[in-house]
Length: 285
Image (cartoon, rainbow, N blue to C red):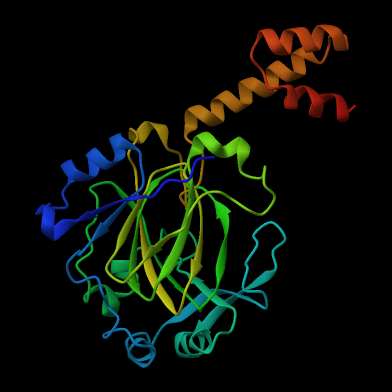
């Protein structure tokens, strides 16, 4: 894997307006970009902990609660706590306890909508919102909290409003090589400061670490035709053509399983099916 620095664009110097045409150009380029000097996005002074407690005094939250600052979704080293008083959560986060907010919708099946769900906060910001926005998610974390490596199937803008957050990204082309060096990587994390907005293209692997008390907002949006998307609450469902392809692939594996091993190896190779599928197939017998 090759280490590269993410391009930064100073919006004031370049006199760039954030509109659908500009967003489409980012999507087409397909590379992460950090947008600097965006208007009214640095809430360092306005969103100190006590100010947030006042603005969110009527909110009960669904949070991640744990004891390890490195949250791991695979081992689930945390638990979910519902109807958590916002004031208690914020003060605990400020004191360094392992608490993490990834906001959810007003009801279980609702998509998160930061502007509607937290009007006392969203009125402070001048967030740009793509035409086909899927969801807007408020994230609050304590110093040194790390979020597991993952990718999203939607493009998104990560807006940093309070504190600094380090983001480590991997190109989708490097997916097969992510663990070649154990837990080390040649890739360099980019640090987002208050007011920075990071464009994360769909399928780019990323993990984050809060360098201090951190507040940020994700804006996920659709860049493929609507017919490519199924119902998706979390923004990580594969496009429908991928789901269809996976079903056909499984049928192909089952069909080839009827052949002797020599034939299987030959035709898996001829049809361009991964050898890993054949290995899994044989191990399942």
